[in-house]
Image 1 (cartoon, rainbow, N blue to C red):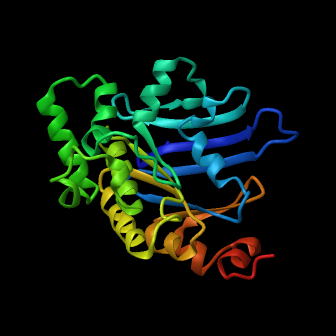
Image 2 (cartoon, one colour; image 1 turned 90 degrees about the vertical axis):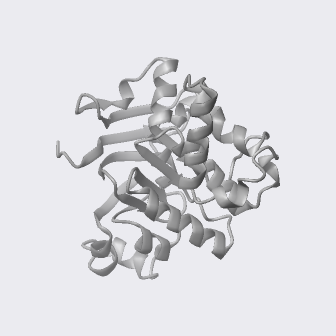
Image 3 (spheres, rainbow, N blue to C red; image 1 turned 135 degrees about the vertical axis):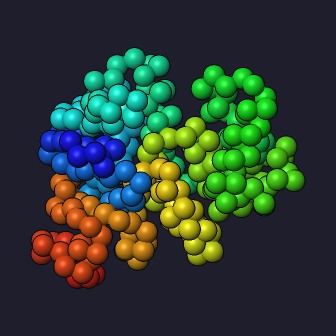
Length: 263
């Protein structure tokens, strides 16, 4: 596999427990290192379902079926490992530290700002208070929220604005130094100023982290991403560099969607 890949999805299908047919069928999608990959498509096309498969978060609910491969590069061995072969609880925990996730609605824990970011570090076995302190500060700085919260770290995170809460959730994820960050419509509940702050943050984070973002916002996808995947009814219709998808799509369905003539 190409050196620049961080993840390679091959012939992947997914079916929710009890569903009559699969939600995703034969997905083949490369994810490149230190790039932003956007997933676009109409509601119900399978974008978020695919995103949540990438760190096996569907496994929090039993009975879902996976087929194919989701290969993640092991940076230590330089080999790819199929995430669908993971079975043990500790392997799932390790996976979600390597492949972090940010949801549509900010999900801070009902604890202090500091403890929100420190929580994952302590879960990962970091006990030295000085190291925890340093990593929390670095994560908050890296998530462009340090200046706003440095004097109120002991206050509840629930008192932050929506945009601040979302950046705190990103800080919580990046504190663990993930290789990939999954963003599921991270700005859809935010005002334009907060949206701009998150977009700037994503552009900065990709220097260190590979990012996959699900968005309904065409302008956001074209602004932010290096690669774009267009999905429709559980299938990947077209994947290419973002400028090609928006300016010169190969599939009529893609063209209709990105130009607003869809349906």
